[in-house]
Image (cartoon, rainbow, N blue to C red):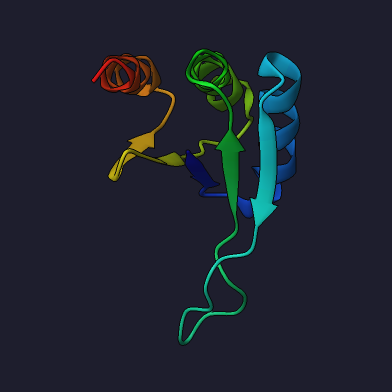
Length: 102
């Protein structure tokens, strides 16, 4: 699963939260350079067994709600993209859990 955050300064905290909450393997990767923008978009790649991946995903709502400013976490899973924020995180997690069973 690939994760990105609207506030890039939160990537390291998200990485630590996922790793400590699930023991999933989490790598930080540099994104593509976008014309007209400084730097690329960085992302986290979460690698784990199906069960551990779901544990890692369940960390996301608490992480999002714990931030002082409103952030958006984008997730790519099974060729689909989702955006999570404080209001819809539980619904997105539910969808991801259903996709895991497909």
